[in-house]
Image (cartoon, rainbow, N blue to C red; front, side, top):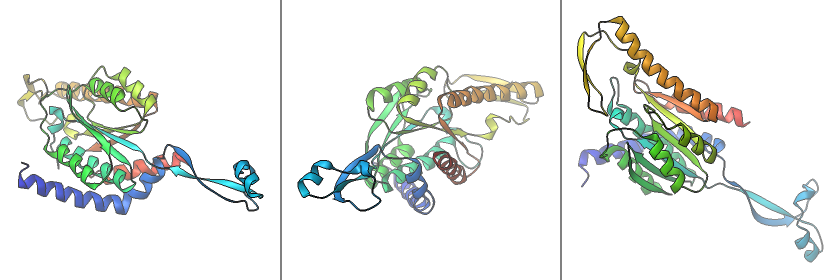
Length: 292
């Protein structure tokens, strides 16, 4: 039984994101994520100016005058959300945690897919595959995805993007759009990432918190790694230590960014201290410009 407070939270998130999607993202989503191609719809009589390459000669010969084929876009897409539910996703020092941020963006993407009659599914992962929700259509399915984003409790604590991507590749055979919602604090996933980038329209949604890059001077503190559980006493009053910690995180980010560029994967960087709407809208706009 889901607690009443979670049900209220799911409902609030639905109302907020559905309005946001309807008012802001629906058209952009439709324009930048194309269907699988064009499919035949019907024939009609030829009129001056029609492309002669579309003439249906079989129908034309039977009817005694020219007919042309008409096609419509095969709109339906498969959209997959890969949600990093590792322990580091619960970190957040500002408005929300990274997990809260992922819930908001997942809801916006799920409802964007639903409003465009696309199928949406989700894979929740830590250092293992925690849950796989096959792609389906409809509002109730989108709500079940949001429920799991908010309510699902994983058994693992670590992160294995490699495991998640290999499971995706072996399970979702159709091409489609894949959003990876993660902080990308991981190693050894590059090979699987490259394979997935060739198979799907892959988009990296990077959740960050500013304190991961700017360590405050608060003296001696006990820091615990959320995923491994290891604790260490750190003297944050030392500029050298603060700089080394920041540089280590920035190097990790740079490695991931270089991988995104080399594979042609788009990146959306989101912060726990800021609203995601402007970033997502900026991504839609820049991608639409490229497609034009």
